[in-house]
Length: 149
Image (cartoon, rainbow, N blue to C red; front, side):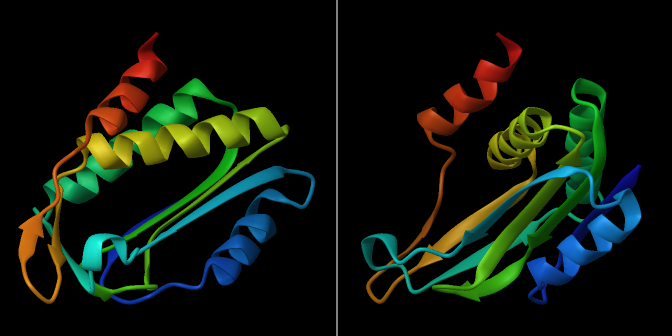
């Protein structure tokens, strides 16, 4: 079982991460990937992501552990960036590997839903006229809650 969980300021190469995962679990796995980037919504020029050191890493580990317990995963990569990121830059990368596609897809979606609702990361949207803290949306909360039903 391969697990790589990273919180970092620098960018990452999802292809390199995918190669590492495939080398670790073999090429017979079904693999699902997700990459999230800074969007230019409502004039956003950049995001600033703050975290609570120690607590954030622990929360990432816990989400990964829950995914491994819920689905028969062979591997998982979870990379989340912090610091100042401009439009187009990657924020998060998730790769899940399983013997079949459905567990890989489901685990990937599960991880993203809980990243948005349970991890102590705070996002500040920076624009030309204002800077605001981004709040968790009701849609994000509903998506995370749907996993318990």
